[in-house]
Amino acid sequence: MKSAAYSARRTVADGIEVAELTDAAHGVEVSIAPSLGNMAYEIKAAGKNILWFPYHSPAGFASDPRLCGVPFLAPWANRIDGDAYWVNGRRHPRMMAQFPFAHTIAMTYRLASGELEVETVLDNHSAEPMPVAIGYHPYFQLHDSPRDQWKVHLAAREHLVLSGELIPTGERKPVEFADPHPLHAGALDDVFGGLVRGPDGRAQFWVEGEKQRITVTYGPKYPVAVVYAPPAREIVCFEPMAAVTNGFNLAHAGVFPELQSIPPGGQWKESFWIRPSGF
Image (cartoon, rainbow, N blue to C red; front, side, top):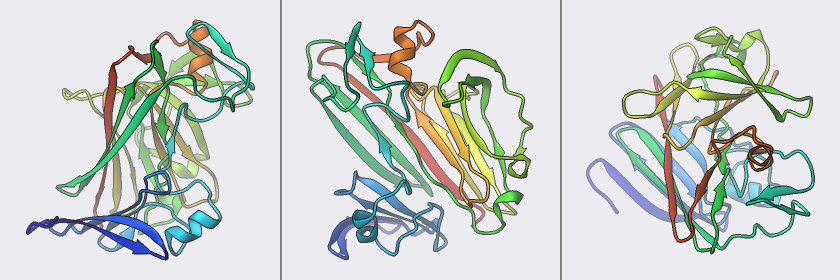
């Protein structure tokens, strides 16, 4: 598909099928590997990849995968507090057991006006409510300054208290970080709630270097943000999450009543957006 400003095409890179989206007017190009988790592995702004992807091609990722690009996390995002989880009042004995819901997942990438939308649709085909705790773990990088000169905007009012295993305890406290928060102050591996939203219901997080900025916008059904910025690594992650870490078990324990679910035959749909600027 082509127009004067946009194009979309399928190609092959080292034997891996790739979908490429181009916004020529804004200098943004996106590459997605459908067979590798439908993962976006390049978002180029003025020729620079804003995603951390330590491979020359998706074939390298296929042979030696690690977390990078924009990985999809399902049926729950991040860790849980044991080898079992609770769903609809029943405890599933092994976390590797099949997720007991017939459902389909549709993911759509749209590139327009220099911004990439990642839409996810879940359809519940089972006969009981299906809880939703999916998420994404995008790995971002800037190119105009080192990590310790970056600063981030955290669009949240609540900072969730974590256990030693980085599991939310149920306690929440006001966000105490500066705005913007300089990454030289230390590492981040934090869970945030109470997102600050505009009139459109969306919340915006961003990282900024000397001039370059990456903004991640959360739709209303992503009520939780994990922010990960480890020391001595030139990355920062803004993770859109439909539930807190360990959401199924915390909901069963009564400390996360906000857990979303899809009724039998129902649908869940939400997007987040990635916009580079200053490149």
